[in-house]
Amino acid sequence: MAQTPLAAAVPQAASAVDHRIAFELAPIGMVLSRERQIVDCNLALASMFRTPRELLLGRSFSCLYPSLGEFEHTGTRIVANLRDDGCYADDRIMKREPANPRGELFWCHVSGRALDRARPHEAGIWTFEDLSARRPLASSAQLTPREREIAALLIEGRTSKQIGKAIGTSPRTVDVYRARLLRKYGAATTPELVHRLLGS
Image (tube, rainbow, N blue to C red; front, side, top):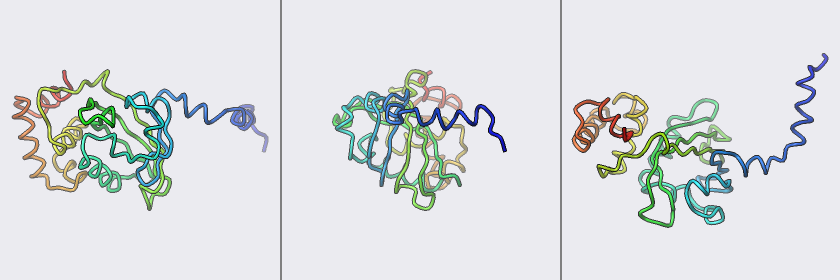
Protein backbone atom coordinates (compact mmCIF):
# COMPACT_ATOMS: atom_id res chain seq x y z
CA MET A 1 0.00 0.00 0.00
CA ALA A 2 1.48 3.37 -1.03
CA GLN A 3 2.06 5.97 1.67
CA THR A 4 0.50 9.39 1.39
CA PRO A 5 2.99 12.28 1.21
CA LEU A 6 2.04 13.28 4.77
CA ALA A 7 2.50 9.76 6.15
CA ALA A 8 5.87 9.49 4.42
CA ALA A 9 6.98 12.82 5.87
CA VAL A 10 6.03 12.08 9.50
CA PRO A 11 8.83 9.61 10.34
CA GLN A 12 11.40 11.91 8.72
CA ALA A 13 10.07 14.97 10.57
CA ALA A 14 9.89 13.07 13.86
CA SER A 15 13.51 12.01 13.60
CA ALA A 16 14.54 15.64 13.15
CA VAL A 17 12.79 16.79 16.36
CA ASP A 18 14.89 17.15 19.46
CA HIS A 19 12.40 15.86 22.03
CA ARG A 20 14.41 17.24 24.93
CA ILE A 21 14.13 20.77 23.52
CA ALA A 22 10.39 20.26 22.95
CA PHE A 23 10.00 19.20 26.59
CA GLU A 24 12.11 22.06 27.96
CA LEU A 25 10.46 24.80 25.90
CA ALA A 26 6.83 23.61 26.03
CA PRO A 27 4.52 26.56 26.88
CA ILE A 28 2.93 24.65 29.79
CA GLY A 29 4.49 22.94 32.78
CA MET A 30 5.44 19.32 32.18
CA VAL A 31 6.54 16.64 34.64
CA LEU A 32 7.70 13.04 34.38
CA SER A 33 6.84 11.30 37.64
CA ARG A 34 7.50 8.06 39.48
CA GLU A 35 5.61 7.16 42.66
CA ARG A 36 4.38 10.78 42.81
CA GLN A 37 7.90 12.18 42.80
CA ILE A 38 9.22 14.63 40.22
CA VAL A 39 11.74 12.71 38.10
CA ASP A 40 12.05 15.56 35.59
CA CYS A 41 10.27 18.84 34.89
CA ASN A 42 10.56 21.62 32.38
CA LEU A 43 11.32 25.32 32.69
CA ALA A 44 7.66 26.36 32.47
CA LEU A 45 6.80 24.30 35.55
CA ALA A 46 9.72 25.73 37.53
CA SER A 47 8.66 29.24 36.53
CA MET A 48 5.00 28.58 37.41
CA PHE A 49 5.94 27.40 40.90
CA ARG A 50 8.62 30.11 41.25
CA THR A 51 11.42 27.80 42.23
CA PRO A 52 14.62 26.64 40.51
CA ARG A 53 14.13 23.45 38.50
CA GLU A 54 16.98 21.67 40.29
CA LEU A 55 15.20 22.16 43.64
CA LEU A 56 12.13 20.33 42.32
CA LEU A 57 13.87 17.25 40.92
CA GLY A 58 13.49 14.21 43.15
CA ARG A 59 10.89 15.92 45.35
CA SER A 60 7.42 14.66 46.11
CA PHE A 61 4.50 16.38 44.39
CA SER A 62 3.34 17.17 47.93
CA CYS A 63 5.58 20.27 47.93
CA LEU A 64 3.30 21.83 45.28
CA TYR A 65 0.13 21.54 47.38
CA PRO A 66 -1.22 23.86 50.09
CA SER A 67 -1.33 20.92 52.52
CA LEU A 68 -0.30 17.27 52.83
CA GLY A 69 -3.98 16.32 53.14
CA GLU A 70 -4.77 17.85 49.74
CA PHE A 71 -1.86 15.95 48.20
CA GLU A 72 -3.12 12.68 49.70
CA HIS A 73 -6.78 13.29 48.74
CA THR A 74 -5.76 14.13 45.17
CA GLY A 75 -3.79 10.89 44.91
CA THR A 76 -6.82 8.91 46.07
CA ARG A 77 -9.10 10.82 43.67
CA ILE A 78 -6.79 10.12 40.72
CA VAL A 79 -6.86 6.37 41.40
CA ALA A 80 -10.66 6.36 41.77
CA ASN A 81 -11.35 8.45 38.66
CA LEU A 82 -8.65 7.35 36.22
CA ARG A 83 -10.13 6.70 32.78
CA ASP A 84 -9.65 3.39 30.98
CA ASP A 85 -6.90 4.95 28.85
CA GLY A 86 -4.97 5.94 32.00
CA CYS A 87 -5.77 9.66 31.64
CA TYR A 88 -6.95 12.05 34.34
CA ALA A 89 -7.58 15.81 34.53
CA ASP A 90 -8.94 18.34 36.99
CA ASP A 91 -8.64 21.93 38.22
CA ARG A 92 -7.18 22.34 41.68
CA ILE A 93 -5.64 24.89 44.00
CA MET A 94 -1.86 24.60 44.22
CA LYS A 95 0.92 26.55 45.97
CA ARG A 96 3.83 28.48 44.53
CA GLU A 97 7.28 28.60 46.16
CA PRO A 98 7.43 25.13 47.76
CA ALA A 99 10.02 26.29 50.34
CA ASN A 100 7.74 29.11 51.51
CA PRO A 101 4.97 27.98 53.92
CA ARG A 102 3.01 31.10 52.90
CA GLY A 103 3.50 30.61 49.17
CA GLU A 104 0.77 32.07 46.96
CA LEU A 105 -2.18 29.79 46.20
CA PHE A 106 -3.49 29.64 42.64
CA TRP A 107 -5.84 27.71 40.37
CA CYS A 108 -4.09 25.14 38.19
CA HIS A 109 -5.37 22.75 35.52
CA VAL A 110 -3.58 19.41 35.78
CA SER A 111 -3.87 16.63 33.24
CA GLY A 112 -1.84 13.57 32.55
CA ARG A 113 -1.54 9.89 31.90
CA ALA A 114 -0.47 7.00 34.09
CA LEU A 115 1.79 4.74 32.05
CA ASP A 116 0.26 1.65 33.68
CA ARG A 117 -3.49 1.85 34.35
CA ALA A 118 -3.20 -0.87 37.01
CA ARG A 119 -0.55 1.09 38.96
CA PRO A 120 -1.56 4.74 38.50
CA HIS A 121 1.20 6.33 40.57
CA GLU A 122 4.07 4.13 39.43
CA ALA A 123 5.00 6.37 36.47
CA GLY A 124 3.24 9.18 34.65
CA ILE A 125 3.39 12.20 32.38
CA TRP A 126 1.65 15.33 33.69
CA THR A 127 0.98 18.84 32.44
CA PHE A 128 0.25 21.91 34.58
CA GLU A 129 -1.47 25.06 33.31
CA ASP A 130 -1.63 28.20 35.45
CA LEU A 131 -5.26 29.43 35.40
CA SER A 132 -4.72 32.48 37.62
CA ALA A 133 -4.92 35.01 34.76
CA ARG A 134 -8.50 34.01 33.96
CA ARG A 135 -9.50 32.51 37.30
CA PRO A 136 -8.17 34.65 40.15
CA LEU A 137 -8.34 33.01 43.53
CA ALA A 138 -10.70 34.93 45.77
CA SER A 139 -8.89 35.44 49.05
CA SER A 140 -11.73 36.94 51.07
CA ALA A 141 -12.28 33.71 52.98
CA GLN A 142 -9.78 31.31 54.50
CA LEU A 143 -10.60 27.81 53.32
CA THR A 144 -9.69 24.47 54.86
CA PRO A 145 -8.05 21.87 52.60
CA ARG A 146 -11.34 19.95 52.28
CA GLU A 147 -13.23 23.15 51.45
CA ARG A 148 -10.70 23.94 48.71
CA GLU A 149 -11.13 20.44 47.29
CA ILE A 150 -14.93 20.71 47.25
CA ALA A 151 -14.80 24.27 45.91
CA ALA A 152 -12.74 23.05 42.94
CA LEU A 153 -15.32 20.39 42.14
CA LEU A 154 -18.24 22.81 42.56
CA ILE A 155 -16.62 25.09 40.00
CA GLU A 156 -16.62 22.15 37.58
CA GLY A 157 -20.40 22.01 38.01
CA ARG A 158 -20.53 18.69 39.81
CA THR A 159 -23.45 17.68 42.02
CA SER A 160 -23.10 16.69 45.68
CA LYS A 161 -23.46 13.03 44.66
CA GLN A 162 -20.72 13.34 42.03
CA ILE A 163 -18.42 15.20 44.44
CA GLY A 164 -19.01 12.64 47.17
CA LYS A 165 -18.09 9.83 44.80
CA ALA A 166 -14.98 11.67 43.59
CA ILE A 167 -13.61 12.36 47.08
CA GLY A 168 -14.92 9.28 48.88
CA THR A 169 -17.53 10.83 51.16
CA SER A 170 -21.32 11.05 51.36
CA PRO A 171 -23.39 13.62 49.44
CA ARG A 172 -24.70 14.80 52.83
CA THR A 173 -21.16 15.62 53.98
CA VAL A 174 -20.60 17.52 50.73
CA ASP A 175 -23.78 19.51 51.44
CA VAL A 176 -22.42 20.43 54.89
CA TYR A 177 -19.22 21.75 53.31
CA ARG A 178 -21.20 23.56 50.63
CA ALA A 179 -23.24 25.30 53.36
CA ARG A 180 -19.99 26.38 55.07
CA LEU A 181 -18.69 27.79 51.80
CA LEU A 182 -21.95 29.66 51.19
CA ARG A 183 -21.62 31.27 54.65
CA LYS A 184 -17.94 32.13 54.24
CA TYR A 185 -18.53 33.84 50.91
CA GLY A 186 -21.87 35.39 51.82
CA ALA A 187 -23.52 33.63 48.89
CA ALA A 188 -27.21 32.67 48.77
CA THR A 189 -26.97 30.06 46.00
CA THR A 190 -24.41 27.68 44.54
CA PRO A 191 -24.10 29.66 41.27
CA GLU A 192 -23.42 32.80 43.31
CA LEU A 193 -20.86 30.86 45.37
CA VAL A 194 -19.10 29.67 42.21
CA HIS A 195 -19.11 33.25 40.90
CA ARG A 196 -17.39 34.42 44.09
CA LEU A 197 -14.97 31.49 44.23
CA LEU A 198 -13.79 32.50 40.78
CA GLY A 199 -13.08 35.98 42.08
CA SER A 200 -15.62 37.49 39.70
